[in-house]
Image (cartoon, rainbow, N blue to C red; front, side, top):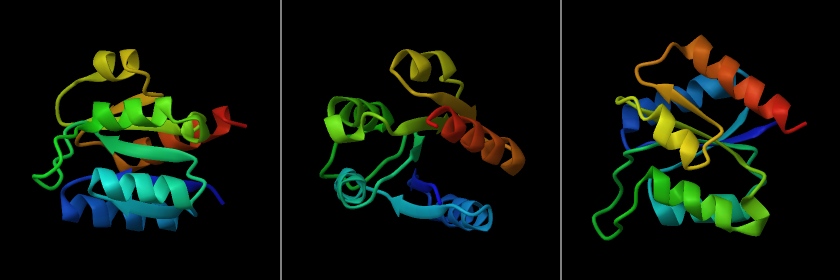
Length: 125
C-alpha cells in the first residue's frame, strides 16, 4: 500500500483529500507545519507528497511549499519521494523548475488527482 503525505493549510480540503485517497486504497498522513512534515517523513516511508505551494503554517515558521520541496530534495533518505504541488494559481513552470514531479491547478477534479498520483507512483517502480 502506497503512503501519501498531504500538506494543506485548509482543514476542509485536508479532510476531503484524506478521505478520497483512503477510499482509493492509500495510507494517508497529513501535516500542516514544517515540523509535522519532517516528523511524518522521518517516521514513515512516504511514497508521495501532495504539497500546497502556498501552505501557510503557524506564524513562527516562514515556510512555503518550495521550501519544503527543497528540504525533501536535499535530505538523502527522502530524495526518492515524489512531490506533486498544487495551487489556485498556475505555478506549473515554477514548480517543475524547482524539481516537483508534477503540478495540479486548484480546483481540480478528484479523478484527475487520483490518476496523477497513480501515474507518478508507477514511475517510481
